[in-house]
Picture 1: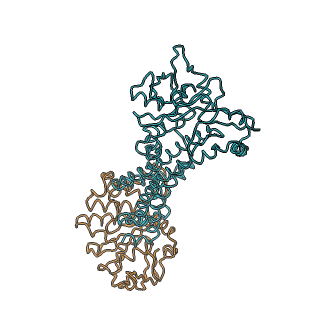
Picture 2 (picture 1 turned 90 degrees about the horizontal axis):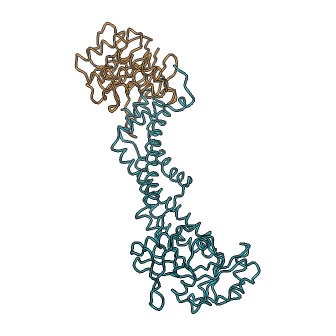
Picture 3 (picture 1 turned 90 degrees about the vertical axis):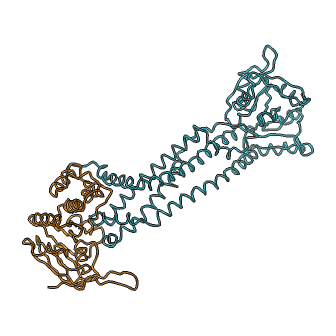
Length: 223
Length: 401
């Protein structure tokens, strides 16, 4: 279970200027739940994902995952936490453009120093699942937006995480590809993963397999 | 998963693969760094290799120097010494041998170099082993009664360039010519010492330089106990106040002064090299490009620890700098020992008017290799890792944003 307790996040722009991204929010997400965080740009949706992924720490309050205080973890432990628990699909995918699809997908496993056979099996499995195996040797910079997104989803799933976070996953896609992503989301939900999507794309609203939609406005949750 | 060996566990081959691909991804930039790094390593190593060769030559030369040389000084310039002084010097307790040398510098105008003409007498003890071997091996007065000589390799080459294959005509002090056959070429104990040397009988040298039978150029004194060299030198000074008495220690100082002066020029060159290298290192250490920062942010975001990032950066910088180091050392070896360091050696061997050219001997010195390594590779690695560490310890979210 994911729990945010009285979480406030303030970004320091410079010495004299700061931005309050979240104000004392409280949120609980159950295991296997699919939650849509919706709201306009700058409302604080991405910050919530970032805190759950331990990519940043809250200014005050706590973030707990399975009762573990991940907001207090030292840097190396938060990296391990991400590696073992989180699959993150970034808005701009954050793939390394001069690496091939397969190399990008395997990146999270590189520090684990697994044997070659395991690495191969894991990458083949995840590429087939997200229909990108035919592009495995193509450099990411030569892929279309939809293919880049599938590569990003495959990378997010290579370590079989229990939590999937996606930040504006359809922002750079046309409607057809967005619908295709929603189908992949349905499959992921079926495999009992906890999924949190931050989006303002109306295609995600009112989906039958979505458990909750939460409105975020000016750094607060509208309940 | 299969069990791994210790090496497989310690060395993450995927990190190394990633480091290699990172180098290739920025191939133009890294090729530029590799070229500069290789050139600087090459320059640095070449300087050290030449220094080592010269040092080796000098050390060998200094070892072969006479323990004491007695020269007669007349009106402030060196004059021929009476051979009769030999007996008095030999009577000094502690002197094991004394030899009157007949020799001089002969200016070979065609090549613009000085040769050293050394006279030997087959019935005398020679003051050093290399001359002893020559005397035993060659007959200076052959059956045709034409005088002959043995020449150093450098002399031979100079003479050949001027079409003297069989003989050479020396110009005597009265202006007449003296024909001397070239009987052979010798390799002395060291090339620096023997390259410009011509050995012939004492009588021929006397005739060319017009030295009387009762006179010699100088007297070489051998001392049984090296600790007593200075004491015996003092005694000779007292006996012959008009003479200059030079010990091998005095000669060592003057030889080393010449060398130290030359190495001063190289020190300046060396400083320029280091300055350029540190400019690159400073540039590297002063920060990463936005692309490099973003990549570190992505790696952190997908679960890489700070030490994973630093290990990858270590491999990346080590592979690049070590490859450049090996290339630089390889080029320096070829440049110095195969091509004999064209251009650079002239700075070192500036006294070539006195000494004809010689080959730089191969000296393998692991200390030099380590010194060049530690002056280059770890500095570059540190300059790469430091800014990466700064970025890797920031919050991943902050770096990606």
